[in-house]
Amino acid sequence: MNRLLSSKYSWAIVLLALIVTNLLASSLRTRWDLTAEQRYSLSPQTKALLKNIDTTIEVDVFLKGDFRSSFRKLRNSTNDLLNEMKEFSRGKLQINYKSVDEMFNDEAKNFMFTEVVKELQMNGVNVDSLMQTKANFREEVIQQMMADSLKALGILPYTLEVQEKEEAKTQRVIYPSALVRKGGRVISIDLLSGKTEYSRDPLTGSLVTDEAKSISNAEALLEFKFADAIEKIQRKQKPFIGYLTGNGEPMGPETFDLVQTLDADYQFRIVDPSKTTVIPKELSAILIVKPSIGFSDSVKMKIDQYVMQGGKVLWFLDMLHAEKDSLAFVAQTLAYDRGLNLDDLLFKYGVRINRDLLQDMQCDLSKLVVGNAGGQPQLADVPFNYYPLLTATGNHPITKNLEPVLTQFTNTLDTVKADGITKSILLTSSENAKFVSTPAIVSLQELQTIEDPKLYTKKNLPAAVLLEGRFNSLYGNRASAEMRQYFTTAYGSFKTQSDEPTQQLVIGDGDAVLNSFTKQEPFTMGYSRVQERSFANKAFLQNTLEYMTGNAGIVALRNKDVALRLLNPQKVSEQRTMWQLINIAVPVLLVIISGILYMQWRKKTYSKKA
Image (cartoon, rainbow, N blue to C red; front, side):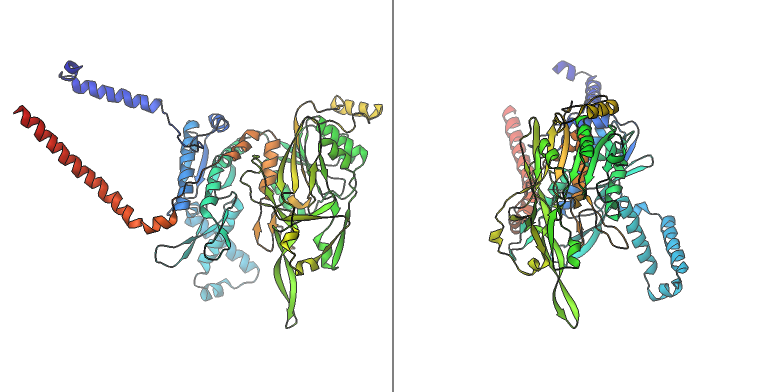
């Protein structure tokens, strides 16, 4: 070896070794993820998805610029994930980092402003006068049009409060979002969405948003969000979803957001079982939303046999008639049974919806007249405990890292014995709840008095359950020979048990997937008009449908955790200068000491030889 290295060709040998090493390193790329939660590793489902990308998919990430540490962490995690995904996609995933301003060139801005001016002039507005009185009129119009365009794409703003050390706080609008694009299709991703965590302010004792923990929850969902978007944008055909009618189900503006949500990812059909031979097997799932008229045995049997054929059902049911609109005309209203005639069917499947109304201290707010001043009613925002905010429970992928779900006049439910059926409670009340049984009187006067919290003694009352397994038919021993022949002709056989495992969701609220609305516009499902914010109703529906319609592997990525390992902020502030000095001075001292020791070693070694 010494003779080889001392030869005149040693430089060529070293150069060749370096070239071979580099070639091997580039072709045999290996990474070791040493984190306990494997945060830098992609799941087998994601790897398989990426390897099957057929044409180029572009991802635009709008996290360009300077942010504070928690948002830099989100940006870095997004960057690390996308780079890893790009590797497994064999270059078919193209990543672009942009600011939202780069989406609009001067030509687009001029076009938007011109269109607004035309509309204002058509409505008789003197635009020249406006431009003279408002110096920034053009900029304001363009900014508003840009914001509207971004909102239409699903890119939502976030107001970031910035404070440099010993300087006043300032606000900055950012767009923590991404767009996944393929051909003419575009899917938006909210990078910041996830379960919001809260902590106590040490000075005031009030609950405040814990930004670090909330962003950590958002980080944990990044792989799911991007994998879900990539899977959807590559679909050759959307699954069919049915919306059952014929039993008083809503069909008006309150279903606007539901229809929009379903139509984005599925082929949406309206099905009236009373007017069709059977419920088509081609439907991947059906939704039964807030029926108000009792079900006949004929319709129930069609639903039952659809389930036996492997169909999935999402039940959003109000067993009691109780509407807040009724309280606009009377001081109180009586909640009474709707008589839906579904108890035996649901019981057979493994669940019972109770005739009660859930009351929860964790609830939405309502406007209430609390006084009168100068002939004008005085309104206040007060908790309305009949509008509970249901909490995700357990580690099921449908509800992992899910914000609360807003419901109205909710019924609790119990699971009952059903052979071979697995029951997963998805949503429950908080730990401070109670319920009132029928006949229940609902009165706005209850809001004017603060009830003793000690009365709310019930904890985690179930309100939504997922049933999975091979269901037994309610009509296995009831169906006549004629009915058996009827379904045999339509489906090929009458079944007393489903041949393959299937799923059903049952939730004791019909309003969970409906939206409120005004004469001007509908809102999104789960939107609180008093708090002016949306809860996780849409995400809950989307996750459930994805799980049920054959995408459970992608939904399972929601179970990923990212451990939060934070430095003590008080110690960081107190010891900032010390650690800065250590980081600057210690490396320099180590170099100097190493140099001195090396010189001493050389001096000692060569002086002995001399």
